[in-house]
Image (cartoon, rainbow, N blue to C red; front, side):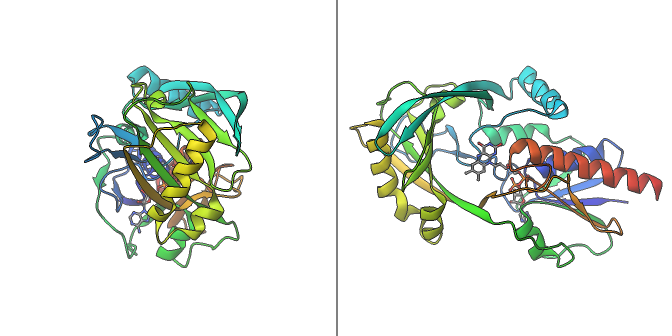
Length: 312
Ligand SMILES: Cc1cc2nc3c(=O)[nH]c(=O)nc-3n(C[C@H](O)[C@H](O)[C@H](O)COP(=O)(O)OP(=O)(O)OC[C@H]3O[C@@H](n4cnc5c(N)ncnc54)[C@H](O)[C@@H]3O)c2cc1C
């Protein structure tokens, strides 16, 4: 019996891989042009700079690995050159400027952008269908919905609703003519009315391109979901203020994430209906909301469906 996985982010790919590795035929459907979901990399075009053709990470900034199973997957990615250890230290700033540096766990990034991690992970025997906006679920199949719960709920009222709120983020990409700021990998911005985070995409990808990605705080983002570009002047002004940059970016663009991250997560690895016909995975589960949790959730759902189907 074939399984349909809807959602080609990291949780959907992990779910599809777990099913396929048990010999179950899997169709993986995603409405995007490619796989990746919120591990999204956009290719720069028509920027008027030498950086056209270069991917920029506009969704997840990086990921960490704590769980041994996920750590083993990360080791494989690193060995294959798909992922690289990026940094264990970020700067910290207030609205007035940089305050210092804070150490933490190793953050991993991808030389070709995080989307490439998802794309290179899907097994060859998974039937991938991109550009496939699913409006109705097949009623004669087992279905795994690997996506934010509000999106899964829209596809089936059998999926429980949740009181957990998802916060939006507008990600603003700034391409400069040259590097015009102190050496840093990323900046956690505290108490700022505009920005929460600044990533140096050149340092993240390892090519030192003068590209920064800014995350606009959830309240301001929520007010600009209908007009993401409208937040650009405030975001650029905040960036220049916080990093003390005098130059203006040569090219700027804004991307809206309506469901960027849930504000809490369930400890259970996934949700599965009693009859085992419909499951939900993603970063709302497995103690998310992180890339690691999404991968663990998708893997666990795929394994659970495979073992139920083997026993049926
Ligand atoms: C701005 C931002 C910053 C982040 N920063 C970090 C970070 O630093 N570290 C970290 O670990 N995590 C971070 N995250 C979270 C991380 O990106 C997610 O936890 C993870 O990528 C979720 O993967 P997923 O597969 O569960 O969902 P998604 O990646 O959202 O995948 C869901 C997929 O379902 C598809 N889909 C939805 N509905 C349909 C439909 N009807 N038909 C077909 N396809 C459909 C979508 O196209 C999408 O590809 C960040 C996220 C954002 C947005």
